[in-house]
Image 1 (cartoon, one colour):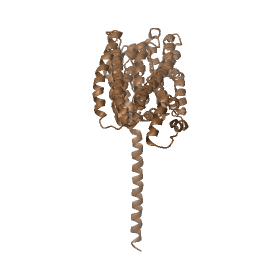
Image 2: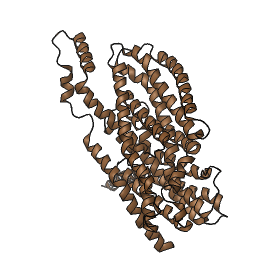
Image 3: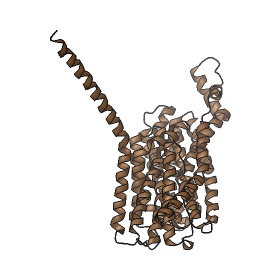
Image 4: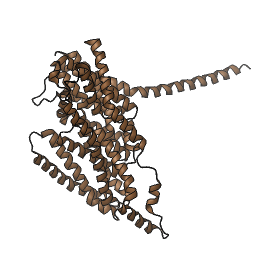
Length: 498
């Protein structure tokens, strides 16, 4: 009897220890949930300090520092939402891991934003709303409201797993805040018509190019009796197209005022030829010992796919950094807090806030939408994913050449859908595929083979219609939603601070 209390005490202690263990596990789980928002808040503080170093003794320093925090917040949301354009296809095709994709995208986003992002910033900061017709003080509050509205909308879209266009969000927000502040007169409606037409045509163009590339890959490589020999012949050509196209794009962005159109094309052709020679050696080395199977083609397309994702990240950083720092640049110019260069490009510290913010956002919050675009809309292997990346890149190049402001989100998602819908059509109607599958079946069976197309026709749709309708709906409502939100935020700011 005297020993009984001691036993009970030991059991009680064990139970108490178990409870403490559960509390520690719960605390760790909650802490992990709070790491990303905590790091994001730290980055916002650093962006404010960074801006303060440059403008602390200039007029309007307080407004610029607050705008820098909003621009950093907007940039993080762009990184979280738009990173799917660049690496979603590669991750979905398992050509790289999520960690590799995030690191590669972060590095090339920073390079693209800082090296080639200055020109597109000018469009967002001065072409949508005529800054001459708006007083400088009012313009600063318009851009503040636009930044906050666009960032909040993109944040909501990312939380809902909807890959919306950050270009739509910021353009709609600038218009809404401008109309709410001074009416519709200062809005450049001709520019808006051009932007809207580009928004309508660019995803269609991306889808068509992606489908055309996939048709070429299937016809020239996949449904050939000797796949490896066909891949050794045509994969270097595809790589050369990618390298040449991106070289032309780089020259167009960096030195458009120096070189003529013919010179830009020649730069691209020359780089493509060099890339073709190097790719032939690379593909020939990788093809040694590979079996004549589709899984072997995945190996040959893996490195080109990673390269296309990296280059597309560079192009995205060069184009979409303006969505974050374009309004900040307008505020800096309006209050005279910092000088632009001779070409009207924003200060480098403004571009750095956007570039680093995009990278922080994609590292902290990017994986959710990568899985949606890369895995859930339609199944992607390295060949299809390469078609998506290359078509997106080419569409951006063509749009830049024609001066059309386009959304990389529209183009990338349109390319993914183009690949998926083309696969549905090709599965049912391609005579080459049906003949290839029949020859393959006859080589492995002596009985009368079943029609090779029958099984595929019975399969479910290769594109998930629910995601298609959700994304289309998100695109349609982004501009009016961000515009209305920006107008309301401007009125609140005006009532509280002006």
